Length: 197
Length: 263
Image 1 (cartoon, each protein chain N blue to C red):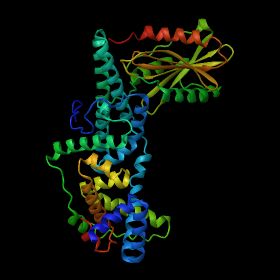
Image 2 (image 1 turned 60 degrees about the vertical axis):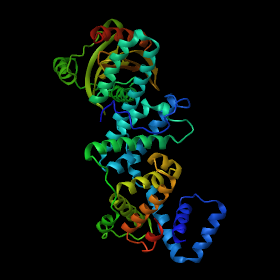
Image 3 (image 1 turned 135 degrees about the vertical axis):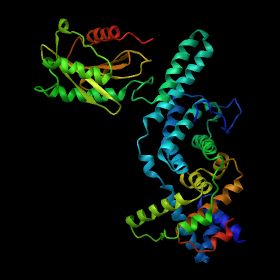
Image 4 (image 1 turned 120 degrees about the vertical axis):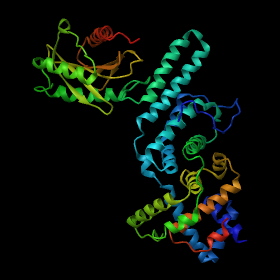
């Protein structure tokens, strides 16, 4: 991952309204680092690789700070850069991005059952752990959309901008991802799949 | 119809609906217990997802990430200045190489243009502790000077001299090495005729940056901080030492001479 590799950052190429790298912006970016690390870790599934991605993301963010429009969601802007760093790295390593394969996911997780009718904290902790395991089994696209909307709580519009896809696609992908997760958790009435697509 | 409902359910789940639509969905769920059960599950999943990887958020951020950010910012600011004043180009380029080199190299050094506050905190804490040990403030007394010097040269990869402060009324009483989160810190301790103590702390820092003397007032102590020749320094002493400032200046001058700034 070279320092010179600053291309591939899409958001707001236009100049004029861009931000300055003042102390406040610096602190705000710094405050996002834990979330960037989490996002990267769930994308890359390797803590060291994830931190390398975040590091590259931070370098790019600083050098392209004038492409962030103050007033827009800084987190979404950073996540866009981070994701692009990840994709660049992925292309470099694998030549082609991995597609999600929900059928395999479902079968692989058949033994992982988790009811949502937990009675107490301990049950909830077990349920959380099951959700975490199920999440790890999701395909990349599904992990990504859930991370953006369900974990980082971006709006559909912001997620659409990060992923560079239409809002309708965000909606349907999110629905499929949630369905896949539910299937993995083994407590899903079979009907949802048909409706959500 | 069914498909539309699922989209609505999801919008409902993600709080994207207006009041009227929300009421509509709520009424629908009341009438369709199977859908309501499904919705409860989805909502619980959403709750669980919100705490996904929450333990990662609680981890301390690796220093290299903060350092990258600050190095990037420093480089960016240098870049700006370079545009304005061409005569600074070479110096800026040299510093840029150091910054980038440091980012790429990840030595166990601090090298960024920020005061070494963690070290000061450590120095303050360490000084207070050892100062309170009236009998055993040091590990290596003056009688084991040779051993101590040898160890320092090995640890820091070079000798670190010690100013003679007898003329200022302070005698050297010995020193020790402390581990720290980033490297190690050497301590030389001195005692005045009235028993007031002060200590010189030194630790590896960036070769490229030198920092002028800055005096800090701490709770019960006074500290002077500077950076020279690949070391960070702190002089920490009792607040009762009246000539702390001139003392710190002569110690600063001593190390500046001992470690002329690197080429």
